[in-house]
Length: 391
Image (cartoon, rainbow, N blue to C red):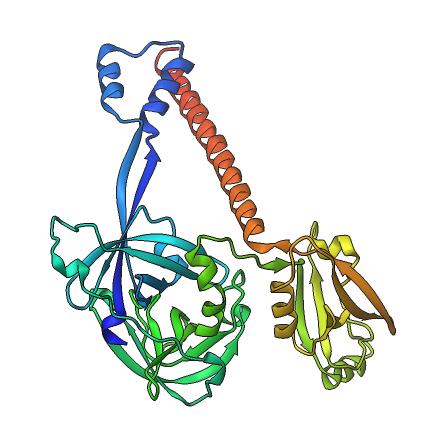
């Protein structure tokens, strides 16, 4: 495994507007004055925009002799340039072929024909080391694993631990917009480890991709199961978009015991809940497919797409893999009656993009209003002081 684990260095070009000149011009214009020659010289010398480079670092693993690399999507998100370094010292440019932010997996392609810092030789023609995928469905709690990566730029660092837990939902981990049942381990993970492999000690195979830690839990880290990554790597390598179904509800697992405990309370705010195994809807979000379809809070989902569901994880998995824009049949229990509801899932990835764009526009509008208030306030203060000194 070791030789196939690489360090990933990224550079992101950042460009930001410079507001100083804009404020000076606005103040002068509001006073009905033209800038003096000295002011014009200052304004002309100030750039309208400032550019700088933001650097990042992570890990990855080569899984194909064609130079395909598996890593986390957040490692290369927004990167303008990506460079990979092998354990033998070879460095190459890499292209981001595809990324899925919902699963936090990306596939890179090593460009072996390019030089890095003017260094190129027959070494670029040497075969690339390749790691082998394992089967994360066979994992068991207590199994020994090692995490391999480049924390802090320390290439090929290995830490050892055990599988502490399986199928940790994204909500439990704290990543509400992800759709992954994570592997939990106590193998030490540090900045720079992201994207590196979690390896089965006995077989020497990759069983996960190290992804994140819990800031408030020392010695606890999480990895994307390799089977989850294997399901999408081929499509990502071809640059395809990965769909993730979304209906707009929050859910919780329900058992007869939980329902009986709720029903035994005469003051329960939830009312009567069917005493069955299923998934209870705890919230229906506005302007979502669930609201359009007529789903309600405290509906108990017992079947999705013809498959019985007993846990919230099962429901999430079925919704995630549902066809976008096509009817998905859900059987629910409401007020003691069984109902059939047709829901048309949306793509979560596109929805999150729209939400980010809306937040960006709102933030820009807030900043525009704040700048206007600051400029107006400055102008009023100047006028006030002038009136005091020159009545």
